[in-house]
Length: 554
Ligand code: C2E
Ligand code: MG
Ligand code: MG
Image (cartoon, rainbow, N blue to C red):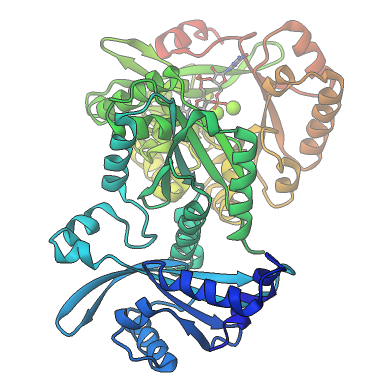
């Protein structure tokens, strides 16, 4: 057995005065008394040392090769890769069940090169033997060996029971982890979770409680005085960096809840930290958000919306408001149908309140289908009237593209209501288009073949607007003036707007400018060649009867 091979020179220069063999003896003694099995491999992965515990655990005599063989074949029988960071499995031998928790360590020299490997094996059999094995399984996560939700809750409760310190509860989410699993497979996904768990173990301090609550969500309870946002972010970035490869990068979002009442239900604390986590819109490698009570109000509202949505659809509580689309002289040519929730108790609810919520929970397609039908019905009602030439545009949410067969939905409506597709316009947002340009380019072409006009909504709000135009041949570009309001640099924004309008015209697209609020804006837009407008300057969205009244002598 050559201990030096794995302990390396590092240990020796810890104390230059001591004899190398004396340190070897001390280390050997220490490792023998560690209370767990230890197996060392050299860099060729040959077993060079194991302590007494390891031999006992695997019922091996003093023969390293035999011991390592038993250990390896157990690993294989459990379907575990030798380089899996941390795992926990039952070991069955001579009719006895033993629960071993194994951790794998790569040993690096001071030059950063691998000098060997170490397995530490903790025997949790006592827990099994005295009947608490089931308890262990109930409170621990098999994949990462960390606490699971149950274990985390229990441990956090007892941590908070007698302490004067203020604690924080942190809850993390890996952005788009489901997508990662789909792209790279469950094994790689699991590997990442195991690595994160391992790094939590390595970086946690004694008075921290941490665990994997479910799927890609980890939680950590730590004293507030020790939390420094900057260094925490740095650490998470390092962790993310270690499990990142060239083909993907991880974005970790962390919600922080400051525990005001330690007796509060731990699940509620987790919910609040998660609420903060979900509020993160930025896309950095590590983003942190602190919980505030407004988030709770927001979440309650969201819950209310979701729980009453189906009832509202069935009971026809949704309606459309029409916002006129006009030429510079105020002459109308079309209208946009905008959803409104006409709530029996709360009055008229604006789309800003419910569209996002429905999109996030994948229910938006139900509303959109309903709104499209209302718009189609309206076009049918206008046949043979003075509004016959007024077109109606409807909104298509990005998620609709995945949940619905858009072409089928719209052609069925034109057939059912005998309406001309030319007056039924379809608005697809720029962000929806950029999420899958090829799919959208194909869809737009198909819709145009069926006679529909396609408009790109909110053009200029994304980052790759111009790039997208080379692949998308829409009929109308809707540019939202809102972006002028949001910028400090009006002059530059105006130059961009001017070029965008010119370019759209050159590509054979018409331009509707939305959000026109003042005469000055109108003059300025007309000056750059815009002819079609939609905005509060002309009219706000309004109920259908008001719209008909206003434009009855159009
Ligand atoms: P959008 O499709 O871009 O609709 C235009 C929004 O801009 C409307 O807000 C309209 O009231 C507002 N607007 C129009 N002119 C002006 C103006 O001069 N100044 C300002 N400040 N705002 C103006 P609304 O009705 O609140 O709708 C907001 C968004 O909600 C819509 O933006 C659209 O993205 C979404 N939405 C509305 N109805 C539906 C729907 O049926 N389905 C889907 N998927 N989304 C909808
Ligand atoms: Mg729109
Ligand atoms: Mg718009």
